[in-house]
Length: 335
Image 1: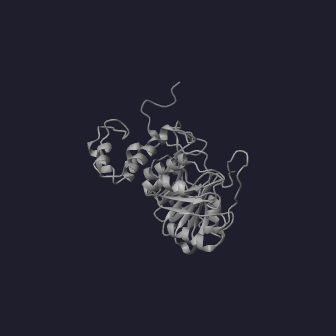
Image 2 (image 1 turned 135 degrees about the vertical axis):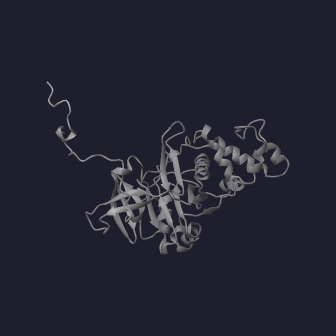
Image 3 (image 1 turned 60 degrees about the vertical axis):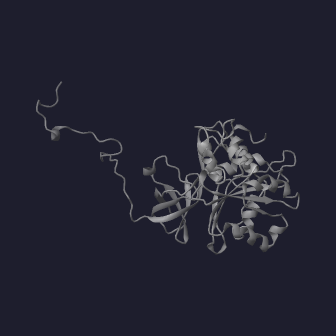
């Protein structure tokens, strides 16, 4: 049965409102020009702790951000209650453009990358010299991830009172990676902590490493007023226990820089890495790739880098190091 006449006006048509009302939907999102600037300190089950000026604010991600993740280190725009008082909640409405993104995958077969931290300048790769034993494959993988993200790597060797640092340093000397060596007894004095802080000054540094290598102990020495729980190494498995469960950004004394303590990792997948970008970390080798065949892996018979090194433009150890790093995606960390 026809309810309306032949020439109906739109005003004659009844519209039944939905359960959420009849407000029209729009793709135009508010710009929030008056939003305050914030720095994400930690993320915990959908709640984010954000530094706004000199106070910490609890916030949640706005719906208009969709599926876009907000991670530690992000610079964000925040609206709402910015007092930082108990039981108040602000809203993150915009994530500013990132200067760097450190990513990893669960393993080399995992297509889903995870952002570890954003806007870091430096990656501190923390490795114990003993208890647990150093694992060069993880160091190599972290170096590749740092080079891919445009971060400067820093090798931090801990527990030098249990084993000498010489063998590990010899492996990475051709790469020219800066390093610092600490011991458990030295961290008790302020002079050693100051020596490490010099490497972190005026930078945002992300700390990564296996559980039990002394990463959080080192962070506690660097930021003594913000103690985090530390664990121990299992005597049977030789592995540490996860005591840091979420990444946390902490300011160095006198606000000379930031350290980001991340949970201990068991693996560092590189499925997301484009191997062609790793060569940018080798400025002495990169010019030699001009004569390489198209899509050269830099580890094949026709690679021009062999001739480049043979002609004396770079040290053979540097080419060996490059090829070792490029091969990390094809080797398991325990190999």
